[in-house]
Amino acid sequence: MTHLTIYGKNRTEHKNTREGCRAVIIQNGKILLSVEEATGLCMLPGGGVEAGESYPECCCREVLEECGYRIETGDCYLKLSEYYFDYLFINYYFVCEIIGEGERSLTSLEKERGLSPKWVDIDEAIDLFSRHEEWADRDEDRRGTYEREYTALCEYVSYTAEQREIK
Image (cartoon, rainbow, N blue to C red; front, side):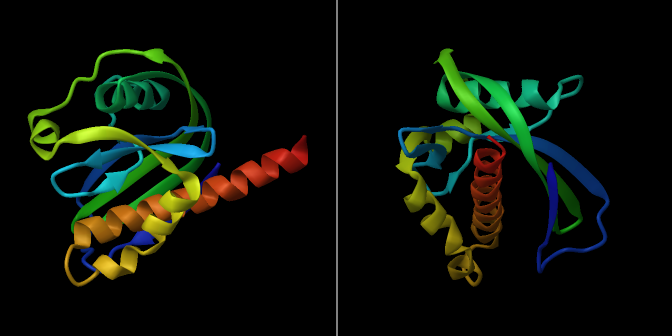
């Protein structure tokens, strides 16, 4: 597993840590994203680890809640540490496979923002996230989210290339 770090321009001494997990699910050249219809914000499905929950359990729960898919986690290929404000955010990225469907369970904020699953061409997603600096002057949260997801997808491409070489 690769470990990378992103230092936000607005970081201060970190006093809080939040761990989360994100899923990379690709089918037929498309990747599953969670999209906030109200804001247009796109991201890989995932979220925060709850007390007593393993990283794979968190990843599975978050994908089910956000997207309505039951998944099986594969390799955790990336640990990404991000420093923003007084927080250290640590996300673990898993290669996942859909094994069924279930019921979505959105938070009130996710409902308000119209969070929904969307399949997007993998190259389109990489292109979208690669333009993270375009948001620097208007929306630092989106800029940071897109930088995180771009970094994760670039690592995924490297990881899958290495896996093909091994076989």
